[in-house]
Length: 456
Image (spheres, rainbow, N blue to C red):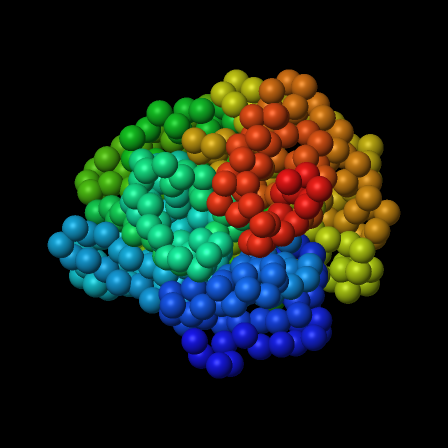
């Protein structure tokens, strides 16, 4: 083992993620090989030290933030290899999704792509698998986990193991927030790179017409992206327009209440043209102005894709500003689970609950198979933050009562642990507790995520 692979920092290593949840570690490491990971785990096991694993710390729940013990930064374990024979890609856990995308396109000579990346391209594969991440194009291509063919991990004894899809234990690692072991790599499937892509943003006067439009769009074969953004998203984007290059080339949005962003992909441009014509007619029937619709094609679509990520960055910057003024403020992101005709009622329910709160908020996210939007509360003070948490608690209780539970779908970590433990259905709790007891009975990996020590 390398003699300096574990570096003592005496509790002075402060770590925080995008939620502004922070903690400290007593030692750190930066593994560059799978053997390094094994050696670190064996050393910590011998000394009885816990291990908190993280990648680029883009999460919103404190899962990768250590409260004590050892902190393992995976970002140097980042090799990506494309196999032209079976058209798969092997990526190590610290590889960014940007690197995975670029490698597949380059090595396949622009014939294949990895389509499931989250909008945060600097996020790492290990984190994406730990949180069951779904990206912008999940409407057609599903989540990152849907593309995993084989998983490599280091167990609590420092042994390197592999699991193929379908094997016992494979699904338990996905969405486990690093609690079962250290994911070191995965083999991912790729898809053909389609030559034609269009992006369209439609603006509507209310949520009902926006959701009616989304329902019509779902039936079109070439739709690959279906996203919702409310008007508060665009107002926040205007506020940070001069700070983010992704926003500088976009015009100001017209007056509206809600927007639907779609992408159309096909190997035949005629199919896209026909679908776009149908969408424009449907939008006009629902009161949208076709002349105010934004459109792009080819490489220009990247600017629309950048808008979604830029809105997330704007939220992060706003929360960082408020956190600097009051360190008790952290990001609050609540998953709104939508189901079919219940979409309209769900949005009305949350907007009504917030109407008299005086809290600033915005809603955006994927209208895909998982049907989860994210409601972000912009807490200006500790009082706002506590009021927001109280709302979350009430919503979780109501969701559980009505069978709408979705808190775990966007990550629990340490920030939402108490909500998870008090409102999650018993089958969800039991699944996570049993997997933790099976793979990590000593609670060595990522302690404090989802559960406290006494819960386990």
